[in-house]
Length: 541
Ligand code: NAP
Image: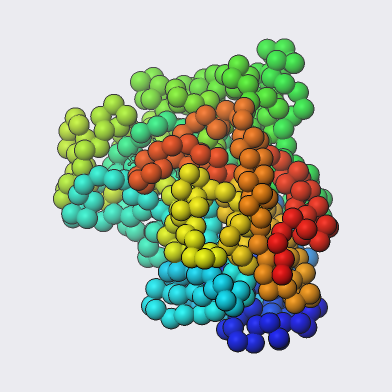
């Protein structure tokens, strides 16, 4: 497609370096290779897949419909690959990632077990110098970060974690070998989407399970199931329609908000609608609910009350049921975990729920966990305690832009970006799924962002441009726009990874607007417009 790279990049090792071989990095590699560019991917893990490589914890699976989650860019791939379940489990998704890597021969440009320690912009040569943690250096014209919004796991900041004598795991650093739970006394700390999937999966395998819950989360049924042959055929024939729909919806899921407000219908109609949503697969109850449940407290209270009643119906002990019902945030104002008989787990004789908002964990002991109330002995402790989200993976790499400016400094008061794709003062660096970008059904957003970045790099190589930078005004305008979009959303008034809160990371106790919360179509329209105007909002040289 282009043939102009020879002159500008001759003395550099690569045209483009991509950090990370998850879904973003793999597709970016594929697209840039199509342009005939010399590309290298550095990946910390020993294999491809990113999230699906690291998160091997029991029960890890999609919350988006499998057929809306896979890559859409290759018709051949869509026909060759068959998802076995409506919401595929992690082993299947990891197999899918490997299948893609094999099919497109991606591995020959991916260097595994290679963690990027620093990325330093070289003003004199308009290039990036990348240093791996083994000390090797690599240079490139363009740098693409594909490091994931949820890829830096965090452990509780409590004393004694290293002294525990049993086995302990963070869910996102789960071993490749099978963990034997039979007869074991197991603790799970954390009840987010990950904790819920883990708990519901291991409860029947363990000897005894103790769940340490700090904040109750709303969850709704996943209603997973196998995909039968007839449905499989329909899916394969209907991919065009499925992806067209994802392009049109607010967050790229197959679900989209109901155009009615919660009070535009009668009480009976509302109840029937909630009942229907509660009985349907996937995120419909969150993404396909009345249009005002995530912005209007009273509307939100109607669905929160409905789901609270469901929890009370499903959990036999009313005290435990009450503990499982969130009191400090409304339904769907945090990322909704989807569950499969999660609440029924608490009806089992071998499961206890400890509310650590009442009796906090004081320390991990060699034998187990000490709360303010008592000591517990365990064979296994599972930390389902989440991630230093969105900016955490950037913080771990020493990014320095023009004139040695530190990205960490620039983002000290929260991220500042241009379209969630670039940062002024960090020329030739593009971010995939970084802050301020549309997340939603992630692969759909990934494909869009990768295509946009590919378009920009094509534009630059065709014209021999060696310098692309966002402007301070462009960055300020986008950052203000993203903040303005967040005003009025109930989710922005709640502590969660989506508002940049992580009690386990110093300096992450103040809410920020870290993600774009407008509609995906509006996001794409803005980015498309910039491209159509010859990227005239950028500084180009
Ligand atoms: P999370 O939502 O941040 O949940 C972490 C949990 O650990 C929370 O219950 C939190 O309590 C608790 N916790 C953290 N530090 C603690 C401490 N020091 N002491 C006690 N409890 C502590 O993390 P996650 O569950 O890993 O999920 C993160 C995101 O990953 C999800 O929202 C979702 O976007 C994604 N995910 C997706 C899937 C899927 O697609 N199927 C599955 C899993 C995860 P507090 O609430 O009190 O902070």
